[in-house]
Length: 240
Ligand code: ADP
Ligand code: MG
Image (tube, rainbow, N blue to C red; front, top):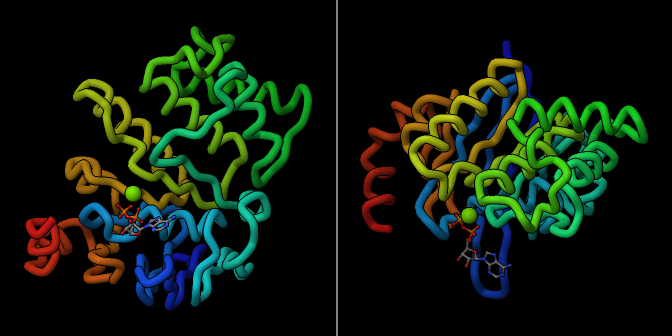
C-alpha cells in the first residue's frame, strides 16, 4: 500500500463572491506525481497557493503527514515540508544564483546553514546546469535559467512534497525535453510531486494520477489515460 503524504479534504476558496475552488478533495501518495490539470481559471494555482500557505482556505483541511497546513503562513508550511515554484517566477533578483539557492536551503524543510548550505546549493546548481551562471544576479539570466533557479531553490529545502506550477510553460521544444527529463529524474529518485501542467506530453509521461479541475470543481480523477479520454474532461478543455 502506498502511504498518503498529503490529504486535501473539502477545500473551498472564495474571493468575495467568486468561488475559485469548490469543495475539492484528493490524496497524494508518497513517491508519486499527481497531476493537477484543467483549463485556465479552473482554480489550480489557487489550490497550490492554499497548499503552500500563500492563501488560507475558506473551508476545508489540508494535512501533510498529519499536520494541518490550512491557515498556517507560508514560512511555516515550508518548514513542515512543502516546497514550490511559482507560475510567475519569484526570486531575489539582485542576488546571485548561488545566494538564491542558499536562501532556499536555509528556509526549507531541512534547514542548512553556512558551509553545509553552500555545498548543498552547489550540488543542485550543478545538477540543474547552472554552474556557469551561478555568480550572476538572477535579473541577468535567461528565462529558462530563472526557472532552473526556482526549481533549485525549491529543492534546496528538501521538501516532502514539491509543487510545480506550470514550471514547463514558455519553454521551447528543446528546453521542454530537458525539463521533462529533469522532472522524471526527480520522480525516479522518489520525490512526491504535484504537477500543475498544460503540456500534454508531460502529463502523459510524468503523472501517476491526475485530478482534473473545471470552474473550481474536481470533475475527474484517475490515470492520465483515463482522465484524458473522459468526455467531461474533453468538454471542459474544449469549452476553455
Ligand atoms: P488556474 O491556475 O487554474 O488558471 P487560478 O487558481 O489562478 O486558476 O484562478 C481561479 C479563479 O480565481 C479565477 O477566476 C481567478 O481570477 C480567481 N483568482 C485567483 N486568485 C485570485 C485573487 N488573489 N483574488 C481574486 N480572484 C482570484
Ligand atoms: Mg495557474
